[in-house]
Image 1 (tube, rainbow, N blue to C red):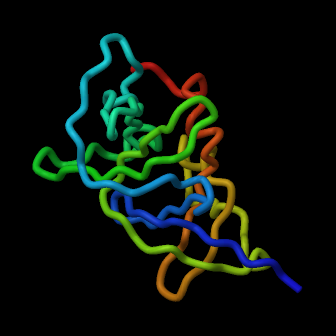
Image 2 (cartoon, rainbow, N blue to C red; image 1 turned 30 degrees about the vertical axis):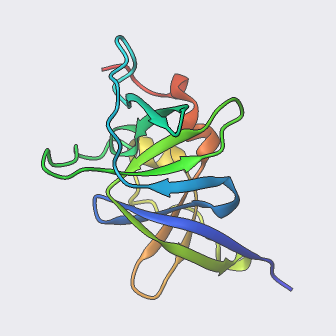
Length: 147
């Protein structure tokens, strides 16, 4: 019997991504951030979440997608980190989706660049794909380019 997995989903540039729901601490609206000098371009800043300092990672930049339009404010998917929470900045929050582990497929060949390295699997949904983000690789900022 196949096991069931739940993913917290969100959107980036029209694509649906997911992370294991057990890794998610909370989802919060846009928060003002303090810029971090000399940080990699994917680190958008630090935010204060009820007294807890959280690093904001811009997933559009991390996945080498186009930048978010200036007038569009990101949402925060706050993950439980090893040392402290980390926020993924996303375009829009989706819902929690439950899928069968048997339905997991390899990322499609059309997925290129950094995104291909950071996607651990794909679940076909009714009218789109659910791209599962490898959070450990995504948070490993040593794997990124510094441009």
